[in-house]
Length: 325
Ligand SMILES: Nc1ncnc2c1ncn2[C@@H]1O[C@H](COP(=O)(O)OP(=O)(O)OP(=O)(O)O)[C@@H](O)[C@H]1O
Image (cartoon, rainbow, N blue to C red; front, side, top):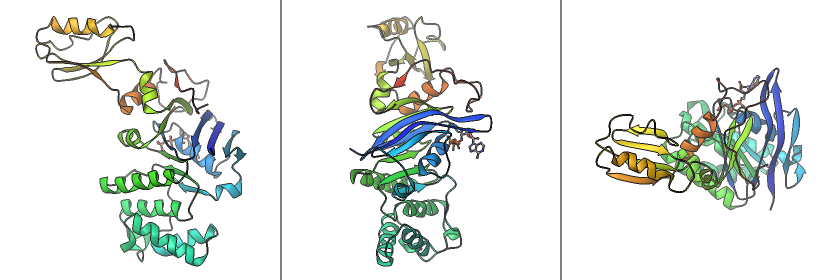
């Protein structure tokens, strides 16, 4: 199965090491969510994948071969800085971009019509891009990434600023492209959406991949969490429980992380019962947001910026044995 491979990329901007041995791969038909704090290195990785920025070392491959200039034409890319001509009409712009990728005039026109229709901006075909709302400009930006029928999609924050309907439309389009066999990589800070949409997720910190796999795989490495609803308990009742860590408290409901040893949660239950009535005691599934917080905060540098020296290691390794390097 063809695969987009990001292999051991490193990149420094002067003394700042933005990427440090970044590796992951995305199979044909797979949607891969690329998440990390601001400045973690997502855009840098995507720019290198597209060849608009050179890596200091490492390689990007598609189907086993280096992604050269010709192969890059088959990539649909949505850059973070966007790239539409503000004073050009939507239709003219999309047709122009399709033609640049070698489509005939009639194919380019048909592709423009298809994508503007699909993405809900057909009524704005004759408008200058700069007169569109930001969300509609983003829809056109996605149309621009898709209009030449790319084999690979690399999208930098395609969901930012979209309304819920547009998010659904965009999600549907990405799933459709994946179902047609494209590897789809996108970055996002909308972790619920990433959890819902992506087949696999990569979490990066300070230019390094620190967790990679399906959300279930990442979850299986996380410490078990239990919800305790103890209405009679005094605030802070669980703070000093040995082997447990309070994750959150909302009113009488406390989420506690416990160790992996069998029955580790029983000590928490006993402590809760000692305070009086326990209305609820139940295991909690960690969300991607929980996992992200764990991974990103684990032994984090004091500032969450890329390191200029050897990066620290996370307290747990979430690197899956699968395709992630
Ligand atoms: N052209 C540049 N010159 C110098 N430093 C840069 C340049 N581009 C990016 N950086 C730095 O490299 C690091 C990684 O930036 P990058 O844009 O890849 O992060 P990101 O994960 O995409 O962040 P965000 O979520 O905020 O978009 C940051 O510290 C950034 O300031």
